[in-house]
Length: 201
Image 1 (cartoon, one colour):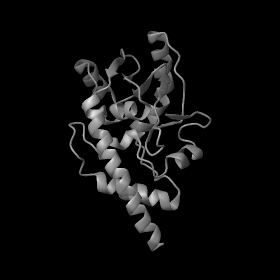
Image 2: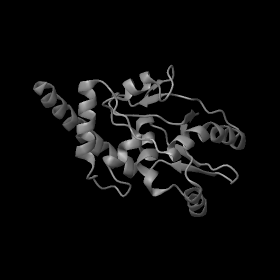
Image 3: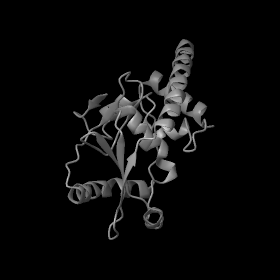
């Protein structure tokens, strides 16, 4: 695994590093939480191919809720550190040994990582009541373990004034194996599409 910690997430350099690279936050567009090939894979592939040619990361829409979530993240991490008695290391990007796929965790610990979500109130209440990793985040969390090689990953849902949900998620070897197969095929096809597109420029 290669770790980049000399730049900040959401910085211009960060977007440049991630341009054209499949990353864990979008792995659900390659393999669904139930382990099926995603119907969104081709669209995501075309986006990444375009990013490789333009050398820029596609800007993604950030709703008010998403912007608020980013602001809350620092407080959430401080709370996590206090409750778990650990120190969370901020990193910009982790890549697997091939440097073809990556993830940008909200923090790294010793042999594990952290994914923080700051959802709307009703969503946080739903997560707290379920007491388990929300299905929609399975590809991202398991994908982060695939990228880093770690055997477990912390998921935290945070909303001010309510108790957080903190879950220690174990690696699902079966899911990670299926994800790796899909990612290998995806990256091979992405290379071909990129070359075809480059020849047209």
